[in-house]
Length: 115
Image (tube, rainbow, N blue to C red; front, side):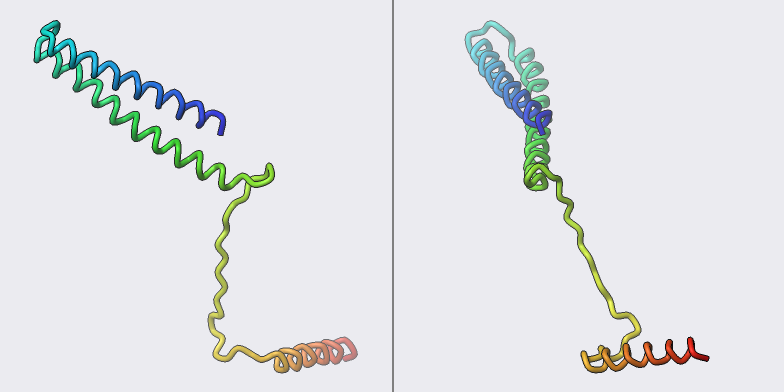
């Protein structure tokens, strides 16, 4: 989680630097210090980096959020889905039917042991 926080901070700092650099390029273009072609070429690189970095920062934020939700009281918890099926069962027995079946099994075991 520490590495994710650091990556997010570094990414957001770089995004701010890129925004400032694009703003300075724009002002340099307006004042005539750089040509339009050079401005377009340089801003295209910055825009590409900005887009990729923004997506990465958002992914890191999601990962951090998930990691924080899983960590509770110093322990990691894993969500597990459990499914039960009653394949082949036509009727689900009632409690009394289950007790009767258990008694029958016990009686048949006793008979098998004595014989």
